[in-house]
Length: 497
Picture 1: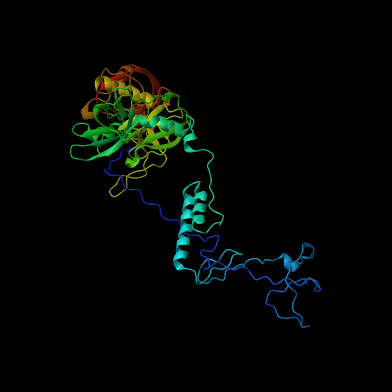
Picture 2: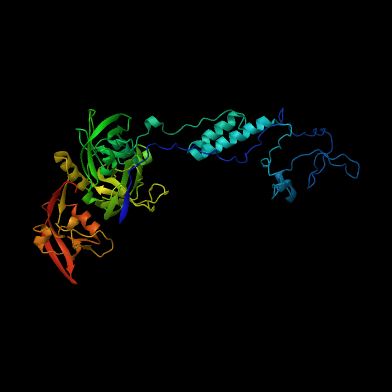
């Protein structure tokens, strides 16, 4: 498997685009009211007390109807009593028309409300429409937008005439507390110990990555590819979540592991290292929290799960032919360029990995955009990162466990094939090395490392590097179709070759 390191190479962060306005919707009430208000319908005068009463017809006459044939004036209108309701009166008011008759595309007034006056002020109508649009945007933007939308409408004369309505939240922000085990609680505890790293090379180029406080002396743990460009003659700085910025320098870095340790030149007092977990005990399905600066956006928190363990990964930074190898923790927490070197936390807030690489669908060709998250991120297990960090702090250089044999880097070979020759014409199997002592030869195919199935050379290297020099391991290999096993003690190699 080949992935791309996800350091952010950009110098600037693009501005966040503004939110487009929400489209207006038909209001629930007319947008304007005729000047002077609308008058109540005329009520006929009551009949004299001594006037004879007439039976109420089944269908009442509307005001302004023609006199009856007998020449009598129609009786005054009176609403039918419940006992006198008929089929005609039960349907009043009639339902709205099925198809609006507004050919110009305008919105009809709400049913049962008086039609807006033609003499209404156009400016007032436009202002009312704007209020409706703002109310819709508020509803989309937040859970309390409904109360905000109602207040805006009422304050512009579109709501009840009885005055505005105040809606109180059940808990004010100062009374609202989040449990330590929630994502918000974990993030609040971890963010003060996470830094955004700015690495500028001697020629002015650089990028942004992430790191976290490793100890109280001011050591910062991160990825090698985050600081490589500025390691020799550039400038490094670390900015905390409170905005305070400190100059830093490289203590040591391991290209093969993709791990580096920085030291703050003038570390502040009261540094709080992030607690380290046990990556060997992580299980698929465990919750994860990633913190970093994707595309330069510092203090970004994303969540997910462990989607796989012991994933063989060979990652490159795109600027050299050297790769890093890891038996990685795979997560679907959103990881993007700039998250490199940041902590991958468990649900309790302990570091279980260092975010290092992402799977990319981009071929990396000219004109293609920088890779982004597709839900496949890879982190260096913290147990391995801790061993490397201690070596770098102590000696300034990494130490790699080795078997003393060169294997091919081809994928899907059914195992790690020992090459016919080593680099620069050296023997593929180092004379007197661990593999030679165990009887391995060129052409042998290593299919298992202890209990782990080996599918390729990168898989074998990543698995070997989870151990320490001096550890005893068992190799399963095939030669001429025959399967054999061999036990050997891992050797060591100091520094990056």
